[in-house]
Amino acid sequence: MLDRHALIVLALLAGTAPAFAAGVPARGKDLAEKKCAICHAIGTTGDSPNPKSPPFRTLSQRYPIDSLQEALAEGITVGHEGVEMPEFRMEPREIDDFLAFLKSINK
Image (cartoon, rainbow, N blue to C red; front, side):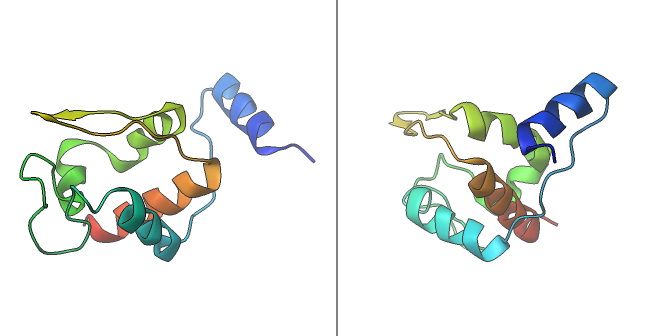
């Protein structure tokens, strides 16, 4: 049986997007609470603690949620006008869970 990385390579070579696990939104919410809530509003309502950090429920207005996958794997870092976002990387399962959570709050 092929591992996940081999499937990704095969999908890229075939010119198709790889199919990823669905992820568990509740685990993704836990990650957001631990790593992101200090600056971002992570719920379906409310303001971000840092006004320069977009609420997660609005991210789909800026980016296709699935397009964040590579940045999360390689190390995402963004400056929010004076407040630097710490760089962090997520493991594949964490990415699946986090994206599932984002999709659940971005309609």
